[in-house]
Structures are given as structure tokens and as C-alpha cells.
Image (cartoon, rainbow, N blue to C red):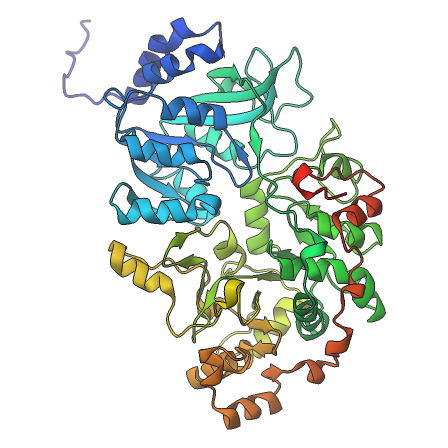
Length: 554
């Protein structure tokens, strides 16, 4: 029997695998097995990366593949150009250098932090083609759909010669980036601090890693979640007291996520004092989706906190988290393990409340950290600060919020989404505005979607030094607007309030002033803080906390 003729039009099903093999063959001469010498990295990248590729360069919230970033930025733009960068954080100057030289053209990201001002200028000058500003879960999800990286440049603490990676406490985004890339025939290159005979634990198996390079110096890690108690003001302590009395206590919030501002740091530091006085231990703030905040140490040590799962780690907290396995998720090697994808999902679905700060709030309760001259991105706030309609498990806090927001139809719960701010921010810039700057920015840059961090219809409460506005209880748009104006203080928005309507809202407990909640402004003193300095936090931790040098002022 003769074989049937070959149909030249028959589809080829392994084009991506063949392309991967060609790239690996081109790069093989620059590696000893999987190990690449630092001096050969640019040649390796040139052999592997094709112009127009989607490249994920970590670029996380905290840890940075800084050596690989510098090597990528140093490539010849005549050879490698028009890359599509898909990464969580645009944090380093080298990340923007890619666009200045033409090596990169398009950007999809989540957070820009210290590069927010430079990013805004680059966008205005037309040097970057913006795909979208994502939430973390959104960007991670698109890695598996339409933004799958061709090349991932990742970072780890250590590896062995087989490429098994050890991330330590800062696993962060690495597993999701590597999985999406490796299983779709992409190339994974890891920058590591050390190459060892045996890693303490395997966070990413070596069969997903193609090349490793020992960086000349340890990767950069940003102490993003450290707030010095010495910088907390009495106004922030007052808003913390109002949040506890007006939200934590009446709803019985036990499962939650805190933002990274000084207002939430103040809440953490008055739990062992003010919260103890109110008899709330065990009734509120027991389970967190949260990075290892140093300001939470006193609450942990005094028995308030039962469990914390973390997005990443925090500089100086490794020894403390390792010594508290009952609180943190720690591996068999003794160090904490973090995972941003898992923790974002936990913050979205498994918590009853998000409470955080923002730069601007409008009359509908929409908020944004994007202003005229700064694009800070969103990170995970839109995931934490949204009501997950897919949730199906009940808790009393969730059900109570749902009852307050009740309309016609089936019973439903509601996630508490709280914005805790001061009426005026830095340099007396008003927090409350008639129109968000992000809308003007969207018009100027011709963005299809204005960069709003948390939409107003998700916000349930706003806390300022003026009091607490419960937006769940508002039944009309006018009531909602006046509730917001009612806590906006002496800003232009606040001065535009309808005084009679605001008083009527107060009578219905939609607005609650400090005196309505039994909070005396005279008690809002720094004496209420369980720790008043970073040194105090070290004392609380039994000297397990090792603060970064810039926070040591003794």
C-alpha cells in the first residue's frame, strides 16, 4: 500500500515550538548549559529577542530584574526595536530608557510609582504607545490570552545549575509570568543573586527556565510598604479612630486588605490601644491579604492578627515573618512565600473590606491616583476596591453591607470599599474635586478609557477628618453627592454643600460626625500609637525586624 500524497496546505501545529528552538540554537554559544556569564548577556538577548516581540521584564511592585533591565536597555536599537513591553511595574529609569532609544514602542502595565511623572511626559511627547493601564489580575490574566510574552526576564534570589529558582519571600509576580511564557514556547531568562548546588526550596522548576545569569550585585528591592510611625499626624489618627468606630466595629470586619498610606498605618498602630479599649480584639481585623507591614507588628504581637497572606515581602521583615509561621505563609525552608496573583484573588474574593487612600475623589465617588502631571498606575487597588459579583459565600459584614444597599430582587451581599483621606493633601491640594484630572488627561492623550482607579459605584464609605459618609444608604444621586460634599471639609466641593440636606443625611446616619460616633478629637493624640518610631517597631518585634538604612535615624 502506498502512502497518501502529502497535502502542502496541511497546517503546521508547532510553529511556536520550532521558532523557540531556533532562538535557543542561536543563543546556545553564549551559555554553559543554562548559565550565562554577565558579560555575554547582551549578546544572548540579541540572539533571542526579535523586533516586535512581547517582552515581560520584571518590573514587579517591589523586586526588580535591574541587571537584565540595564542589559536590555543597552542593546542596539538598529537590531532590536519596537518591542511591546508587558510588565507590572514601570519602576526603574531603564524601563523608560527602552522607549527613549526606540528599543521598545508599546506598553501595557499596572503601576509606575516613582516613574509616574516621567511616564506622563513620555506619553505626552508620543514616545510611548499605550496599550492600557491594568489592574494586576487583569494584566496577569491577559498573559494567558492575548499578551503572552515571547520572552520573560525574571529575577530570583538563587538557582542551581539546572535552573531551579528560589525566590525567597519575594516570589511576587514570577510564577505567573514564567508559566505563561514557558508553556507557550517562550524563552525565560533569570537574573539571580547566587548560583548554588542546592536551592533551599524550588519556587519555579528548572524545566521552565532556559538561562540564568548571576548578577554582579543583588537585585533591587523597594521598601514600598514601610511607613515611619514618627510621620503619622494627629489628623490621620483621628481618621483611623473614625474608621474603627464607623466601619470596622459596626460591620464586624475581620477579613480585609489595607492600602499602603499613613491613614491605614495609623489604624494598624491604634488597634492595640484604641481598639483594645473598645473591646474589639478578636472581633475585627483578624485575617489580612497584606504585605508584611512593619506597622502591623504591634497588633500581631498583642494577639490581634491570626493570619496574613502576602503579595510580596518587605525589606527588613524576612527574619520576622520567618519567626511567625502561625501568622504568615512560610515554606519548609523557613522563609515566607508570597504570590501576587494568589493574594490579589484573595483580596478580591475572600476579604470583606478594602480600605485605602487616593489623590482625588469626585462628586460621584470616583477616585484616581492619576493627575495632570503624574501617571502612577493602579496596581491592585481596583481589584481590592471592587465588589466581586462572582462571590457566593456569606459573612455577616458582607450581608450587612448588602442589606444597606438593598434594592428590589434577590438578597445579595456587598463588599465594603472604603476611601480614607484627608480633605487636603500635600501642599494643601484639595482631595475632593468637581472633575478628576484623569478625564482631562484621557482627552489630551486620546485614551479610549479614562484612568479611574476605583469607580464610584463600588465605593461604600468615605472617611475624612470631618466624619464618615455611608454611601450605601444613599437612595438618589443627589443624596450621594451631598454625602460626599458633607465630608469634604473646606474644599471648594465641601463649601458647595446644601447645609439643610447634609443635616438631613446626618439625621439618617448617612453622615456621622466624630461626636456622633463617640470620638473625641482631643483623644486623637500620638500617645495613642502603639509604636511612635521605627525603633519602637524593632522593640515590638524582639529585634527581628531589621529596618532599611533610610529609616534608621538613631
